[in-house]
Length: 489
Image (cartoon, rainbow, N blue to C red; front, side):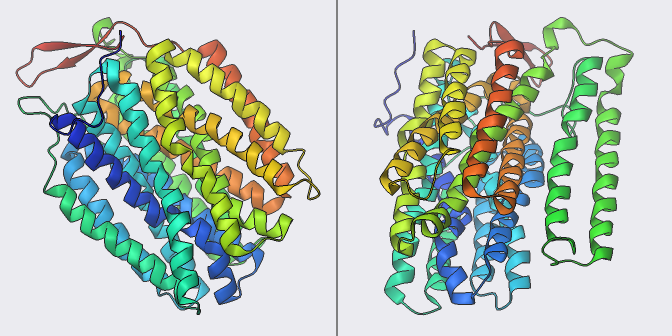
């Protein structure tokens, strides 16, 4: 039986933490994903080409890939309180600098740096995991993720109106500045109102930092392999910016980045080996083992669910303008419907996971994602816009519920590494965004939707045949050396 969760009972400490934290996430998304609905205004004010606008959208999600990995490690070490404050404050400052940049090169660099604010999501996953029991983690994480994700809808419903009301070429700059200042102020407020754990609870930390702890030889190999897509996504972005495509960086810079990415991957492999090679000599007791394949499948699942969300919310306004020739503000409002459904879809995915199981829920939502995006792959410009909006909403409901279902399971893998696991899963969400937005820059919109449907179908079979339902208990070692058993079912 599910424990009762009254989200309006602000006398409960964990409910207050939930509300403080989802709003922190909300503010990161206003600043980060406000670029999508503002892009028609930016494109018009600065006379950008379609390709220049699409590259900014890709850059906006690229930095979040390494940032979520790094922030996942840092939050496990330092705690979510200081991390959320730092991300909101620094991210707000970078966003203000972007808003007043005076060249495309500066816009591109600052938008790339702005992507790190998207790592704030990982911080809240650890915070909510500390404050809610396993039987409530799905719905609590769903509310956190769903209501926080609504920040992109909040941006779509407010920033275009600010820009349009000002009317001149500085409207978009002022709108983004207002959002950024609000994020900085809330970051300071958040620090004064929360604590990392309930009073008397232990904040478990990884034994080692720099890479995730692995508990078997086969998992060690899988972990090394699962780092490859993270670097390939950044390599794909570099290729997009290279002389053979956009020409924003020179040939020498392109190869320098390729070599640097290869070097960083080898360094990461060394860190993984340094921390985990002992498992080949001294097997980890069964009591302390977990299956890394669970993390790997959740990685790919989030690549589809959140990668789709980021990609679609970034391109949707331009899609409506380009294919249906509707005004910028109208397009932004229609695009804002897509993230709006986060209010109920992502919490719904978490709640259903608590109710009927994690694996079954993921199987259902991936069926819906696959079918709905394959249908969108058939869209033509002659279709009524309301039909396309309706199908997009249905696709969004399934993908956002899928994100809720993924993070209903993340805290149940291994408590002390929740930040790192959430970071890696979240980074794969951005890998998906880079992948899908790159596809969007190379093909027509209908083919873009079709690719999402095909990738979703592949991940569905991974879930069906390899994912295991969490059950039993996980173990954590207390500071005094005693073992604590934590229920996951």
